[in-house]
Length: 165
Image (tube, rainbow, N blue to C red; front, side):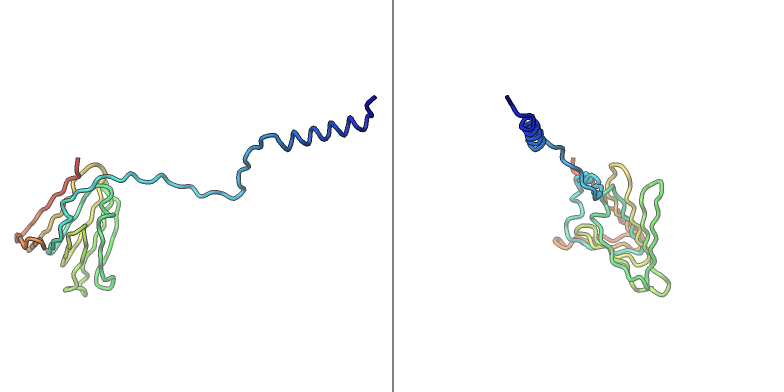
């Protein structure tokens, strides 16, 4: 005959063993996890502005597709230049202008290998959609490629770069 205490003890030990060996669900942490945005798609970029060159004009406008701002660096002096940023139907626009007290202090930007010097105004426009990169220089424009020494001078110069297919 089996003693009742032995039966209860055996059942309790069996249940404990089952509970210990049963698969457990991984418990979620009580600390909130930061949301991570998906990595933006890296789109192919034009190679048109890789060569070292210099562009000088009174006003320079640079526009291009999403990702344009990843290829541009600007240098301004806040005491001599003003800055504004606006979202327009055409895209995200940044405007840098020389203040009256900043005459003679040029605005500088770098688009890949192209160094841009604007005496009065620099406009950057990042547009939605698959559009080319367009650099337009207005007013006594001068361009020179460093490697070849090739030059262009005109009242207006326009350069365009398309993404590779």
